[in-house]
Image (cartoon, rainbow over all chains, first blue to last red; front, side, top):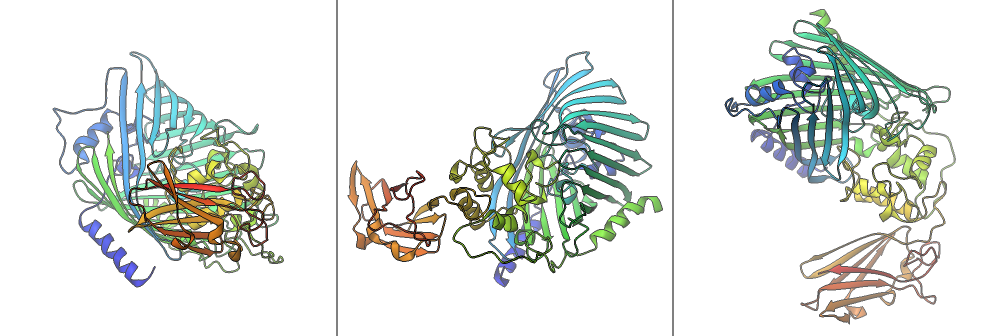
Length: 367
Length: 268
């Protein structure tokens, strides 16, 4: 990128930011931390993400936006007593400048989801479907039967995005990309969620292959524990994917808290994969960290700074990656958010696509 | 307060580190091996793709036991085993890599974000591959997607793009291997306009050719205002075929034999 390109990039970036291009917030875990709630406070899915429940819809209508929606016209998404719907749609303008290589400018549909929750009257069973309709052909992100044993205990069976660490919306975050637990990589299995007072525990068994069916006799075993304190939370997750080609072990600790009006989130991950060995006699080991700081500048306007670190193999020196982001999330009205920001990715110089500056602006409809 | 700050402080400690310098590492971020440098060949090898694309970019996600869609690209062996002649999870009617046929390979559609793909364009969330990078994958597939070497597939057009700008039609043909420049002449190429069901050939002195490595650029002014299409035909007769740099005639009709006509129509 030459100096003129850099100037144009900075000018355009500043223009978008000054125009308030920016942001959103639904399905964002910082909101759970900020309000000191579990994700199930706002989402149908006990572990968060996807369709919002009635309180989530209320929060998105009246609390989140700068100009609150009408309570008399409040629409929670209930079509009938048995059928509930929801949606998210994100359209982006993105410009990416590589330090070496071809720069790009593009409008694109990042994702469009429809959620359906069908719960027969007076039944403890419900069907949850999260269908991604765009971009490209439809793809099912989650589809499961949810069985509520009690107010604090439930079982999910089907295609799941398994709970692991902080459930960020951004699938490209290192903690979601490298661990493989993201919205683009759900798995088939069974998950049990249990909440007692301030403790939330999830355990799951899944194929571990991320394919349509299992490709070997091994399974993946997951546990996640989260404790909610007074204005803070901490948790840990662990996974053993017992694949025949080589087992993969993953573990993390994560947490968040509020302090002086700032909302902090952090996660640290360690991955060991016995099916990959770049150095003779040593299995690949990854180390990842993520820190996010949020500050509500004014009602409806949140500024977010994130910094990420990835060591793709601790057995190899000088191969680390970092990514820093400055984001703004503006919710002027109910159901509409504008999100935007800058990301700066740094990788070893040999990896051309890993060294970039990225500006994006996103229009996000949530329902 | 100490409890609250513990994880962020630890995480911040790691994030404060910068990116690696890449010293003594290859394009995948792996230690450079002391092996003989590969002999210069005309074509793309899987080893080359692994170094610059699969291992360097795709393995950010497609690695290890829970790789997305079960597609592992973390070694040459895995890339070949999980790609070549394997049905695509998202579109089982297509192969991830259909040897000899890049346009019918699902990986190309996902990399280019073509209509008809399921889910998002790859790499998910970007930065996306440049067309130059995608073309190297196209070339490897067009040459037969060989496990080693550059393949025995006959050199062919692996991608074509055309556009009309300011009264001129330009077409850019990308071949799966480099061409022998002197073998490409106006005599190997027919251009003709279609207007009201009549074909009008373009005289050989009315268009320009530029051959550069694997690319053939054709530029022709639109001389028939009411033309609805222009057809480009590459001829490779036995006497004066278009050759690659290994002196093999290209295949025009993708029948796995040298020779044959290649036709492309640009709608005006």
